[in-house]
Image (cartoon, rainbow, N blue to C red; front, side):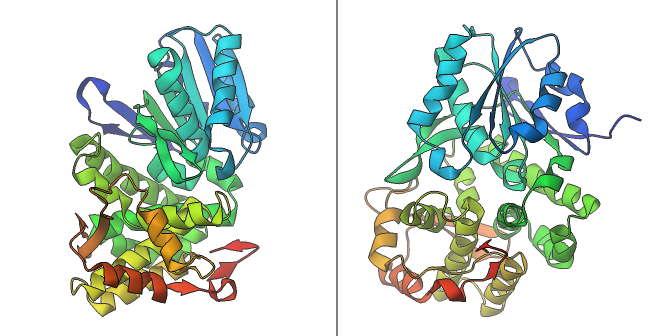
Amino acid sequence: MRPSVQTLTVDLGERSYPIHIGSGVLARAELLRAHVAGRQVMIVSNETVAPLYMQRTLAAFAGFQCASVILPDGEQYKRLDVLNSIFDALLEKQFDRRCTVVALGGGVVGDMAGFAAACYQRGVPFIQIPTTLLAQVDSSVGGKTGVNHPLGKNMIGAFHQPNCVLIDTDTLATLPDRELSAGIAEIIKYGLIRDRQFFAWLEAHMDALLARDPAVLAEAIERSCRNKADVVAADEKESGVRALLNLGHTFGHAIETGLGYGAWLHGEGVAAGMVMAAELSRRLGWLEAALLARIETLTRRARLPVRAPAQLEVDTLLRLMAVDKKAQAGKIRLVLLKSLGEAVVSDDYNPALLRAVLRDFRADETLLWRYGDGHG
């Protein structure tokens, strides 16, 4: 029996592409092969994911000239010198401009493979096969690619849309608990910025989501991808509404950069950042205290941090937050909440309020919500 698949479309005119979601869909070779223009396929993965899924992916491209490049695993390797290993592999194999780059892994692999595809011979096709929850519900959709710089996260990159996104929910079976929670942070985000019914659904289903109930996971992924696809279709290059997808990210990126890439997962920084953005919104008189409490409670239930680490001083956080793609004329522009499901990008706040939130919403390591051996 063939695995069932649900297909969404990111509507970008001639650059539109499908998102295929389902259990076992990696075995559906035709879903991938239909998006390969030439005969050359370069699969980019990392040392953690490749042993699990590389052979299955190679089998899907049987008959093509396939090669692979295995990157080290971790956010700290999302940098230009590591990116060069992808170019090295493409050039050594003499891949031409009709080749297809396939990203097999989480957000770091997807961002780097996509950026390599955007640059190689000034742009070649690529396919996303995300294997982490965070990549499945966020980074694999929308065409944002790039690498980090020591002074700022994701500051070097390009918009380059994939030809196809294939989400096999079975890959989540091998995902560590900490990575699962990091992905849930981005799922919560959609409820906060534009889908209040989804937020309520998450409140009712968080325990099942953490328990990896297949039906609940599939529903959360589908609703997240639908939200992301709608926003990207309306604003591909982030000149308007797409910036709302960055709720919590200005705070979160500052935490990631300040601690050193890889110390906190991206979703962990975003989680704490969303709570801080909600608190600033409350202090501005936009958000009720009861709603802030719901946001913080759901984030804690997802085993995610709700405070920044105390080791990062307020001035450090402010300096790092200023290195942000939304910043204009030296002002830190933030995604804030007018209400549940309604977000805005604004620099219309008293800087003293932001400083106060950064001061009050930090915690010593022992006070951060913890589980296992990681932050959360």
